Image (cartoon, rainbow, N blue to C red; front, top):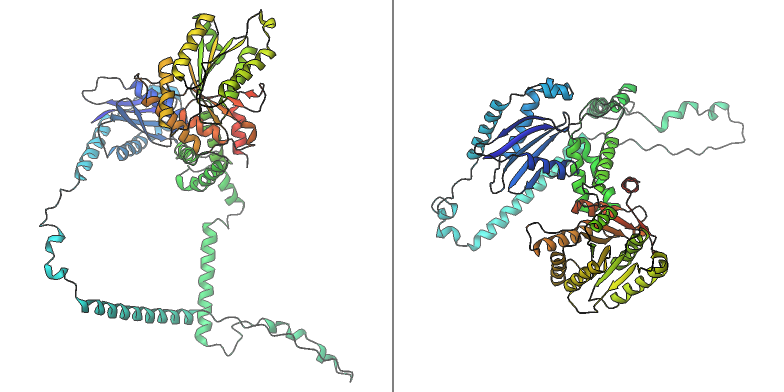
Length: 584
């Protein structure tokens, strides 16, 4: 049933592996894909991963820095896998605890872990247990309760309702009587209320020469707070009850103080600071809940915030805390590291290097911009044009937004301004920016194809394709965008999104990628390659949209728009964004 099972350290040392009978393909590819896409990208909130026809389940052991991975065919439904991988983890830890505590690469490489017999026993027990829990067969009609009912039991009787009402009234009365007796018992067991303090007596100053003893009130100072035991009129039972309650309260306070470490003094405080125990979910849950709310307040999508906190919990579970560190500081540091890792994806986009490589192949480098309405696609396209011109490349702008009125005129205005900033006289008579447009109402994919052919003939370095803004729910426009990308196969597809969105960022990117995949004609469709984040200067420290977009796509943020001028284009500083995100 299982294709493979492997145990390896986070440093990449394979401690033990198992391959199922009849499986000839190597499992190196799926495991490497899991490491690249999940482990290194801090996406371990969900313990499953799909690679081609295989379904992979994994378990992290943070105490010994181990990873347990099991793989099986995607079409199979194996209900015992989660429990099985937990049992294997516990058994492997218990058996090789001494060897694993001796941390060192050489020691792990020299030691041989003979675990095959134990693994087969655990696998056989898991499979037998899953067969024992197989669903029960469906009962026949004669075995069901419905077949036992008679016609008489289905007939409604008028008097039956009255009897029910009387019965319910009786039950209510008995409940009331019981509640009354319970209240009486509780009242009797309660200690008597303390007497109200006497009001201050009015002093009468007589002019007839009273003695000084009448003015001495020192013996009457305690009259305002009499003790219960000094009250001769109090019943003996009440005094005994008060004494018993006080004794129990004292014992309860003593036990509570002992549990909370109230009597520990300096030793209790040091015990809480010095790392002496491993983290578990109960310790981290309150801190993670606060972190989740903090991320949502900073504009991170709610779903992404929950997945990030789950990933941090999986990463820290079982890990021994460092000396003089608290749970909150440990969780916060782990979350910061995860966020930095997310903002620095596995793929780095270097446009200048790619343009020079395309130049060596004597072809233009094509960039397509897409996104929803009003996020600033045309404006940021003009900023990127200015940046490319500053680096000495010629640019052809393809006006493929044939829907919005004024879109072509806007690009023509940008072309005119850019050429005035970089006149042909400074570049050997060569016009640095040109606009390729065919008006409105035309096929955008055809215009892009003609523009790329024109750029190849005229030896332009870069083609920037401007597309119409479209909502992710507009199926016809999403189909047209997928067609444009599938036909022309640009070198880079950039999604332009604004930093003001929260949960909407997830919906936009998921549906844009889904549309590109659904309408592609190849087995490996072209999806979004990078992100341009606009209006970054308007959000202060609510930078959560950057996390949401990068987490969903796994692609980097190539540029950040920070203003209205051509110079207001920056590259993303991951640590600065995380610092602003974690700021209280």
